[in-house]
Length: 434
Ligand SMILES: *Cc1c(COP(=O)(O)O)cnc(C)c1O
Image (cartoon, rainbow, N blue to C red; front, side, top):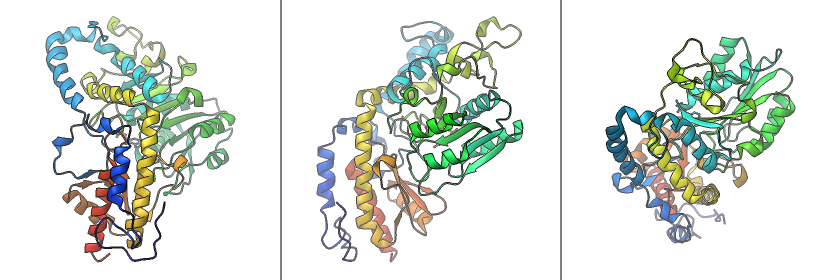
């Protein structure tokens, strides 16, 4: 499918090389054949009329129409109507106090491949990551004094790991990963051993979009007698997950990326049932207590995943998360992944034909099975190029030193939108004299 690149970049239309594919027709055909095209209509697209191409759904998903309606209804009927009674009243959907588990179970069913009772929604990803990483290292046997992670991991994960290491007198063993790829089973196998307490990685690398082999990496960590904590922020809602089947010990992730939960939406934590009552997170708050309203002396953790909760659940902020999960449930994660693979493959074809001749490089895996939902491209000067794109209503994001991420959220992104973004980027590079 790659076009021959014998001729110089073409005319500024959508035909790249002299031989030229009619990219507009290709995009239209792909959109017409898209079984998830209906889902795009569920989003509030008209709220951003100047945006011709949104390519940052991997960083902040678009809002759903249902979110606007359901949030307003919640304010009026639930908050306004039930007032303080809402925390405990069961108006059919469970009192608000139960929402961390209620939404956690839906997430488990729809997106995580997790049986009920193992996931909660609460806090931010950073805070939940700290709580679970501490729970794992505190529960490790004597002599297991190392945390294994990789140099390409998301900054918050690296910083929290360093903080925990300092706090608990542990050592961080860094796996050096290629920024254009991500962590491999071989690298993990070489890094873990009898001193490993915790190994932690991102399932999809935020920079390159590399999709780690979570099942095989988890098995490699277990062979060394250690536990694994996955950060699913860039895979949940984009890549089907099988946490139970993979034997994952613990996981966290965002809901404001592919789950469309909105800016600062609460995160989720998963702890496999076999670790409940055995691993304890350190932020012992009243909402994770077995009997919060007894308000007695001494902390006694609730049974199950509830013990991962610390303070009052962010109920209002879970309304959009539930709307996002409802849409994902209708679409199905396998259909989402199928479209995601087509979107990233299409983006790579466009980049190869229209941008590579202008000096752009691909910094993402080419193998579909190792690629998540975004494609990263590199070129000197991309920081200012990204600013110009934003001025033109094309919204990818820039990641230092020289990367632009083209993030494609399968439920809301059309093939025509991807094409528009790449075409505008090309026009910009050519105007600047390439
Ligand atoms: C986006 C992202 C986060 C963000 O964490 P917050 O606590 O929500 O700021 C963490 N980890 C990864 C891998 C991410 O992609």
